[in-house]
Amino acid sequence: MRRYLVAGNWKMNTTAASAAQLARSVIAGCSVPLANVDVLICPPFPFLGLVNPIIGATGVNLGAQNVHQEEAGAFTGEVSLPMLKDVGCRAVIIGHSERRHVFGETDETINKKVLATRAAGLQAILCVGELLSERDADETEAVLNRQMAGGLANVGEEAMADVVIAYEPVWAIGTGRTATPEQAETAQAHLRNWLSTRYNSQIVEAARIVYGGSVTADNARQLLEQPNVDGALVGGASLNAESFLSIVQAAVAAGTL
Ligand code: PGA
Image (cartoon, rainbow, N blue to C red; front, side, top):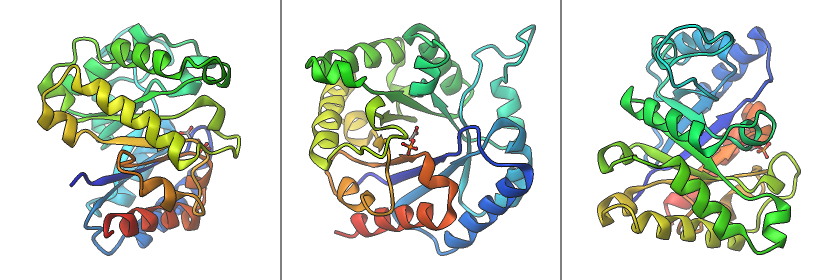
């Protein structure tokens, strides 16, 4: 059985004080070992070094929201994988819809980041998802196929073993309009099927495909009960420890079905 991944994407929120407090509260709620759930928090870059010693060896993992593919050099304003490793990151969110649509990241750039992240030994969380106009035009599967083929180009079987796919329909992110469990399951089953055209059955079975887009304490359980929903990438609700921990608990409960 696949372990759930519940990841909090704090985006460009928190202060040093509130980031430390939020991390402490999340850890306090995860003090009992969670048999079937991995918990990840992704604070903004300036607070990674602050949160790392707070979470220590608690089992909650630290991740970044983005990365640059080069190791070092003249890339003003960018952050490298060696830097992320130095501050204790285990995972990187790559190709989030805000990176694609606000900052113009292409599948080609996203692919470089996935390859570099896996070469550095970190988990890559590759985000894919369609716009509302694309869904309305019946193009969801075509968009997902393109983003998967682009993002995973040259990602071999070994590298794929620690890639998580996050299905995040753009129309559901930060809008309060969550995909229905059926919509999430349909898209995510499609993504697993896509993986089966590229990877061996063991990798396809083990691959975690998580859902993101207005996940809350109230809707998490139904989403997580879907056979191809292996976790949640949580934005807004991850900024409140209580709601984030309720989503973690929903994963614990869904895993004991
Ligand atoms: P949301 O964000 O939960 O606020 O919709 C999800 C995400 O962007 O990862």
